[in-house]
Length: 483
Image 1 (cartoon, rainbow, N blue to C red):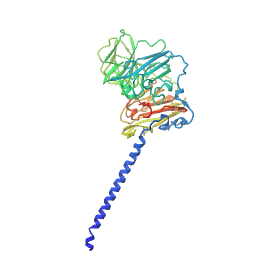
Image 2 (cartoon, rainbow, N blue to C red; image 1 turned 90 degrees about the vertical axis):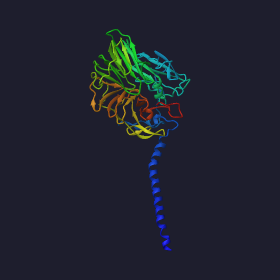
Image 3 (tube, helix red, strand yellow; image 1 turned 180 degrees about the vertical axis):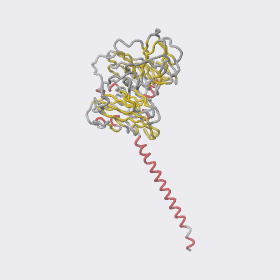
Image 4 (spheres, rainbow, N blue to C red; image 1 turned 135 degrees about the horizontal axis):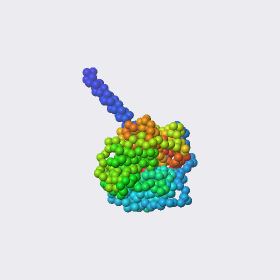
């Protein structure tokens, strides 16, 4: 009888072991999946959100005011940060945005018309949306306009929907080369043609000049919408300022086979520019460089060219690059970056995660993933230093709205040339830049990568002034999609 019961014991033991292994496997699976599920759920977008309430406040060693996370406190709305309505207007422009089969137009052309002003004039631009389905705004890239006219959907205004309009007003008090573009569904709309040139000249002008708005349309490099070479008439020996603007997502090179000078970068004149030979200028995505050539000459733009006074044969790509850290001569900055009020880190990385419930390999800022990114908070009058570093594996053209910063050092090497003022700066993988600026333009400002595919993947932060709020919201329940 006993011998008949002995085989049952191993079966029970095997069943218990099998159940135990199953439970352990389930627990291990839950241990892995539970955090993943939590991160996935946490990344799901709300119906709408305010950029003023998102992220982690970072005061850079200074106090963090109420504006970063307490919207119940009183403050100045971005709507109040505009030019007074009774200021007379000198330059009036109407831009009508339309969609067509191959992209978008402004006043029937792609890119839009150039806007020009004399320093000190007040510019009013009436934007009319004829039929751009997802709406449109206009951002004045490099022009430090009042925050209410910065043109960022969901931050400083609502997107202008079909049949609607919005009037931007600002004083053009910065001489130089700038541009304007949509900041609603920005990647698609800029790529499709919703942009144009903005030029501000001093009283009396700057002499002979030409605009070179460079853009890839259908994979072809164009200048002012024209593929190939663009001819600019000039007499032999005449100097010509060529305003090169890079409207694409990546860096581009500009050069000439004959000596030239770099007169300005991002709208700011270089102090004591010297002749350049055998080197190209790297123009950041979103950035500008004004080059002076003497006719006959060619300004090569990598697949297109500005041919001045008949030019000559195409010049090969130089092996060298102008080092703007050492180009020109030193000059006063107007403030002391050695005594900053706040010091920030903007460290760009990359890691797997979720944004909007979608898994992917996304950009990080200071180790954090959107929307849990830093909110850089300042007070008006602060001297701000920021260290930009990149370990993400790709170059990033960083653009701070509403301010110009001066480059202090690259990879720890101090600047020794002309003050290198920028609003757009290439930060290659492995590089570190130290920059500084004065917080003199109150508002809520984007500080993002101008490869416009990257902000959609999380590479966007904001600079917020103490006491400033915004009533605008972004998200699927709103018309606003600034990226």
